[in-house]
Length: 156
Image 1 (tube, rainbow, N blue to C red):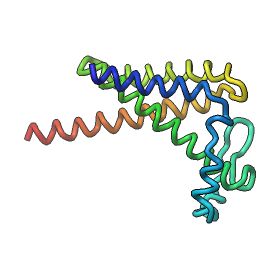
Image 2 (cartoon, helix red, strand yellow):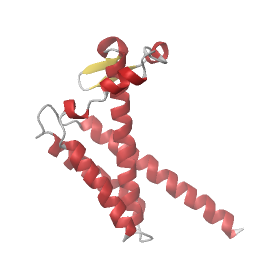
Image 3 (tube, rainbow, N blue to C red):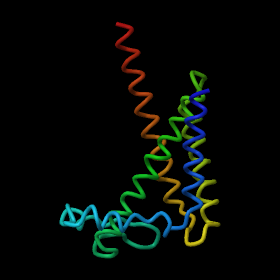
């Protein structure tokens, strides 16, 4: 039951965040306060990330908007990785748990992007679905790998 509760909490957080406008989610004022000295600006200035039909960079968006972009995309990756783990652990030791978790997360990501498209100022992004699914693959992959390593060590 506890596993279901954790998964439900992740899904509720996702639903709430997808319903918020960009302005409601923006952390730029906090970043301006916390990162007043613009740490790693020179290193971040080298990055140029293709996103939609544009390139996202410090030069293009400015330091704080670029850092926020990186945080938002990392949140996609990690958040959907956690959702995938929730599905994986809820599915339990049944067959294809990793595949079900990854496929289920991809479906949730698609539905989330569709839902998000109805939120003012937000758009649907296939690139976010890919990032979300990549988070699921990495997080579940790490757990599967760690489980296999421990299983081998116990067998010795």
